[in-house]
Amino acid sequence: MKPVPLTNNLAAFLSMVSESEGTLHHPLTVCKGYDVIVTGIDGPEIFKGFKMHPFDCRPPKKINNQGLYSTASGRYQILLHNYRAYKCDLSLPDFSPSSQDAIALQLILEKDAILDINEGRIETAIIKCANIWASLPGNNYGQHQNKLNDLIASFNKFI
Image (tube, rainbow, N blue to C red; front, side, top):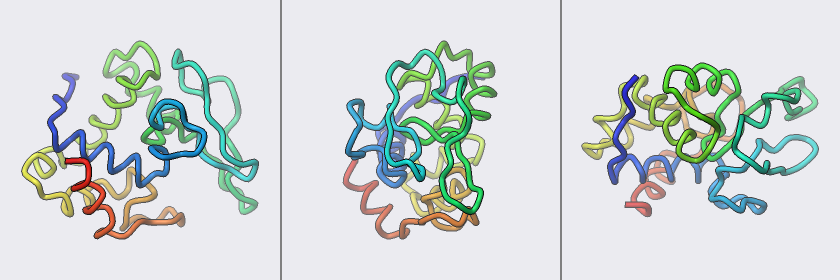
């Protein structure tokens, strides 16, 4: 697979996603959200080192008492199974910020939202990407979803 070139609009969209997912301004992050592990019932957590996905060698994190577990990690809360698939497909050496960016861009590409983002159709892109990120409106993950207007305002802030 060929990497997706990072335009200003794509960079703003990625920042919007990280803000929406709660990683960009996470209270523990020391790396702009690239080091954040999904918050579970045991509270917030970050990881150190980017050699591999933090859940490569540990069980999924318990999110609630209704049986929800997750391996979401990094700035875009990338799941372990996505990391494993894209690590090979994109020839990624690790789970570094550049690898996380590459995976997020590939996910957006697969939702056919790159052109929408680059041409400023952010609402359309958010809708297309809703089932990638639980914080985007229009999915059925049963987690908090941010409002479309708030997400567009967030995107515009990063332009």
